[in-house]
Image 1: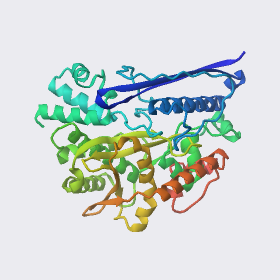
Image 2: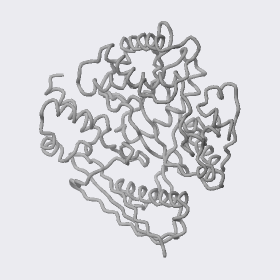
Image 3: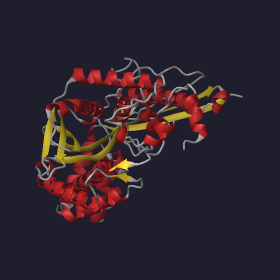
Image 4: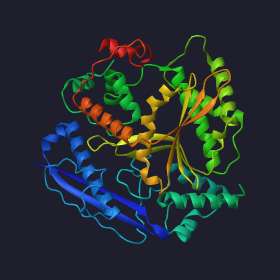
Length: 172
Length: 270
């Protein structure tokens, strides 16, 4: 009986004018069931597919659509057996999907020349702390000014601007 | 003792699977592949740790809080608060701590006091511009054929002119050019990892080195970007990863490194 892997990744980046673009790719593939008994190889296979998915998402967000190959920083991942299908989509305005950290408290990868990294963990923490001290309605503020729901979804520049403004309000 | 299943797994010639690499992992492999095996592949707990390591970690905790207070618009932390943070981090260490000769908690406390004063008095403690990140974990690709790289960057600040990436070190003595040259690849890799943070600004790389002396001195060493050296460094990372995949985990006994290895007992009985 074949083993089924379902691997997906979603990512969002900020655009100018407070906009954002998101892309998600999900891949389902079958692998040899014998891999269950070989956790190392199974993990390696999963890692390969994640690499593939991450590259696809990044290309989509960079507007490459896979047409111009890699950008000098990424190469095609090792091929994986089984059959996979990916479906990337970008949306031009206000994709509100949560951009998670990768489980280790790290912000999204910097691997492929995306122009804007999301706010750093330090900035997100500072925004929450200062807004908390001020008693501000952070969700409302983020929505009204930046069209995002969470400080994690701000760009670094927007996060810096917001921190400056909050500090000014706090008189520090 | 190492659990048997772990030993069994290690003895098989399966490829090593790691979630990520780091500069310290690469350094560990190049210093002693056996130590790398214990720490990064088998993930064995250190048998003991050394006062210098705990000191560095505790000192980093204190200055992390200092810069966090700046980012969050709080008043600068005073010396007593920084020392309290230092000791909290020191006492969080659970492994037995090996002290050097003529060193005890009292001397450690005096040293921390002197160094924190020197830090507070330095320009480095009051960076220009905005603080962007403190002790930030950054993940990215250094070489296509390797696992992703994870770096913990001590401080990133931004002015209208540049983005500044600083790695903070405590050191027995001031760095000479040779010491700086050896360390440069670390910052070049960090620069590569933060390329998408720059927003078009030039990146300035710095080591801030604070000496552990009677009169500590903090020196900021600026590092110029060197694309050729970066390419060589990435190739070295690639080479190390291939060597790891080949399973060459033979020990490299050395009078310089073995006495400071946290796996001495495990290594003897391996």
